[in-house]
Image (cartoon, rainbow, N blue to C red; front, side, top):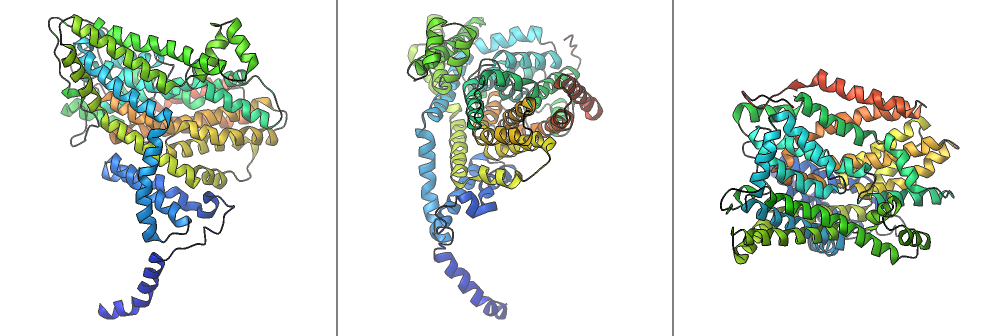
Length: 578
């Protein structure tokens, strides 16, 4: 052993010298981006975070180490030795977290999550959640109707994916638990009707961003178009969104499951375990105090939640209107002033609003209303009500921590150019009919690795439309199809990535362990993505009408569910009439 060490000593000395000394080779490339200079190393942070998340089952630790790996690479690329890179990289983590928290949008989301946690605690404490659960339970007579009602609620809260994830879960969880539906399945139904419906809704908080990207991309090739009209034309080509919504409905109606979701449902049915044994919940709303006196009323839940939705719509309108009136878009300002409640005005103001701030304000107003109602009904004093509200916020503190780390990881990957490297790696010369498929796959990979749909759209849209126009000149449908592939590919990661804020919020709202939620829904997401390519983008790119392609793709979804799915009725001796 000593002889071997002696032979290796020169190599160990050289390695130690490299460890301590800076390596300026990458720093010399001042004009080259990190994505070009570092190449595959830019993929290390998301790979570390995602793999460790599944191995350790600790999301906070995994995200932290993913960020740490990224900051070390950035320092190393700047000329620091690995040892100094580790030292400075560790201190850089604080800067990224502070930067994420100082962003107004992110701060609004954190506040929104915490305040809605307080609102849920107030509604629970006054018995409103229990009352509405009992009311819904009269209609939800079994696992089929329970899941369908959850799906319908998800469609009704179409205007924002965050609001969808945070509202539907707490409402339906007691009913779902009564039907022995696993928390993983509930989280999937919520998650699969959050971003997919918000992304294609005619009016939502996504509209302005999506339409803006389309408009900028067309202007870059010298074309002035009706960007919202193009957005509407992309909807039939948003195969993943549409097929995922149908997939959820069909599996809910037939109770057919496959893969890890089937195991979760069988566990819930056979062992009466709603969550996997040993899985840690990222929220503790089961411990919320119930102080209701007398028979609980559904109005204790309906009025605060209704207020949340109502004031959200009012906030979207007023905030977006103020933003547009303060801009230099004279034509749009005139439209708003001449027709303040027209469809065009509503579309534009919703898109221009700051959803994070608006939802925080709406949740705060709804909390005040719930607090006053609880006080007037004698359930608690103002002091006790505020304590309940604060304790409710505490239960979601871990969610805020995970969101901050996820955003910080996204910031590190943005500086490294992870997405740019993926695009350059996968966008070589290809036959035109493969372009929509490759764009969709790029969107899925980038959004899964980065956990952000907005960032993915922002990266790919300026590339997709010019590339599609160049490859198929004069074919407007091909360009629209490629734009749709960007928008729906980005939804894949938003819906399935363990570092996506929507995924995190959906698992929290359902009371599911985050990693169990990701593990069970990912096979479903991959199946729907595969169908979207084989029965959607490829035949469409060959010129088949989307009006024919879409029904065939829908049939393929149903066929896969019946071929591979097994019926799992989680209840015993319960009749479900719908």
